[in-house]
Amino acid sequence: GAVVSQHPSRVICKSGTSVKIECRSLDFQATTMFWYRQFPKQSLMLMATSNEGSKATYEQGVEKDKFLINHASLTLSTLTVTSAHPEDSSFYICSARDIAGGQNGELFFGEGSRLTVL
Amino acid sequence: QKEVEQNSGPLSVPEGAIASLNCTYSDRVSQSFFWYRQYSGKSPELIMSIYSNGDKEDGRFTAQLNKASQYVSLLIRDSQPSDSATYLCAVRRSYSGAGSYQLTFGKGTKLSVIP
View 1 (tube, rainbow over the protein chains, first blue to last red):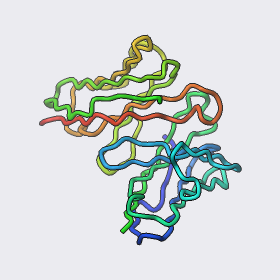
View 2 (cartoon, rainbow over the protein chains, first blue to last red):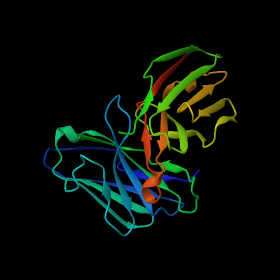
View 3 (cartoon, chains in turn green, orange):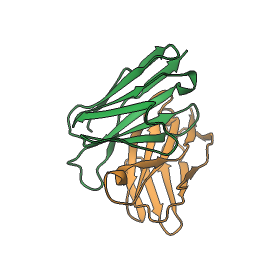
View 4 (tube, rainbow over the protein chains, first blue to last red):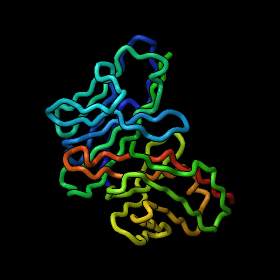
C-alpha cells in the first residue's frame, strides 16, 4: 500500500513552546489529509481536515489558532501545536487519501507522533 | 452525534480459536466500513473494508455487514498471538466533498490471543 510518513515520531517539549509535525505522502498525491489525536485508551478523534491550497476545516471544539495546519503541496501537510501545554500531550496521527483512489479510496495512516509537553 | 460503538473488551480467546469483534453505528446512511488493527503505541493499519451487505473474506479475516441492523463485525479465524491488538471499527460519512472521506472511529476492542 501507499506510504504516509510522519515526523517526528516522538517529541518532548517545554510548556509554552511550539511544535511542528510533518505528514508526507511518499508515493501518491493527496489533496486532502486528516489530522487525528488519540489520548491513552481512547479512540482516534478527528481534529481537522487539511485541504491542499486552502484553509483547513476544524472539528468542533478544536482551536484553529492553537493547532495551525498548512497544506502547501499535494504531498505535505504540517500541524503546528502552538504554545503547547501538558494537556496537549497526545498521539497525533495523520492520514491521507490517494486522489487516484476513487470514491472508495483507502485512507493511509502515518506512523503517528507522540507529543509530551512537560 | 454520529457514533460508532464497540465493546472495549478485553476479549480473550485461545490460540487457534475464532475471535468475533462487533461494532454498531448510529448514522443510518453510512456507506463504507473499515476495520483497523492498532498495536500499542502504533498507528492503525487497515485490515478490511466492506461496502455492501453480506460477508467479505480475506485470508483469516471475514467482515460482515448488516446495514438494516447498523451492525458490522470482524471474524478472525485460527487466531494467533500476533493478532493481539486493539481493533478499531471505522465508518465513513456519507455526504459528498472532501469531508466524505473522514472516518469516525469506535473506541476499539482489545483482543488478547492466549498461546
